[in-house]
Figure 1 (cartoon, rainbow, N blue to C red):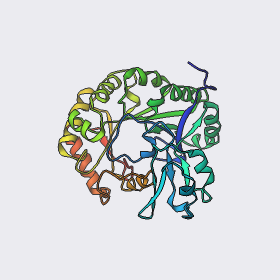
Figure 2 (figure 1 turned 180 degrees about the vertical axis):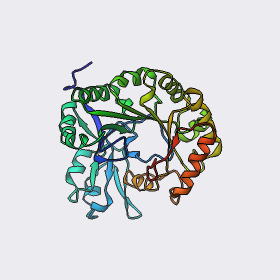
Figure 3 (figure 1 turned 60 degrees about the vertical axis):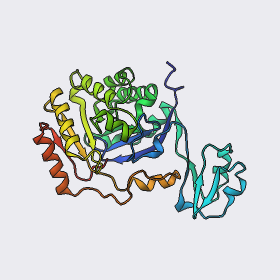
Figure 4 (figure 1 turned 90 degrees about the vertical axis):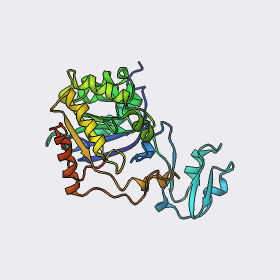
Length: 314
């Protein structure tokens, strides 16, 4: 394996002072690449490993410079919006550089471990006021397992609390080397039924369930929190919650199981990538009372560790 100074990871966002990705104040690092294609994905810019071009409409002065210099049809105006054709043979770096308003940028930047540690160290004083630390999110960091492992090891050497958010949809051999350097592991169990999982996420649920069995029956079970995003009409159904409760309680009756509210802000991100949001754009988040009912239903189905933090979104 290359030295951590030589490894490079592709990151599409770094959020400092985050309060929703683990305990305390955290630095959340979002990795490019995801094995799933959930139709409700809230971070579509993190799905692909390559650095995609994004149009920031609020920065655009609509001068037409980009379409004038795009020679292969990579950019075009349609119905007042810039359409991006990523398959076109364009000099994308030049198009980003030439945009006078800074409306074009890439959704990914390559970092070395030392470069990211320089960012993380700025926030160490805030971690010490509680149980804060670093959370690897995405996408799914396990897609870049070597780099994620090197970054977690660097954090552990400096005594920084670590967390990982994953779908656990990749083979155990890629996930397991990360576990010793983790304090918390958040695993998404979106749909239990493998047929429904394949329909709505592009991948069956078999690998995720197998990895959860290994986690909840193994030495790292105390680190695990399972999460289920409540997507109206898809995951937020009585059948799915009952199946999830039965599956989880059979492995660990006391497992922490967090139900996440639907995030109505997700559709706005699709426009940045020139994509259409697959679900209805008028779906709304559940009320506090509705979330309490979901939690009650999950507990009555045999999962007493079910909970929800209102405002914690999918």
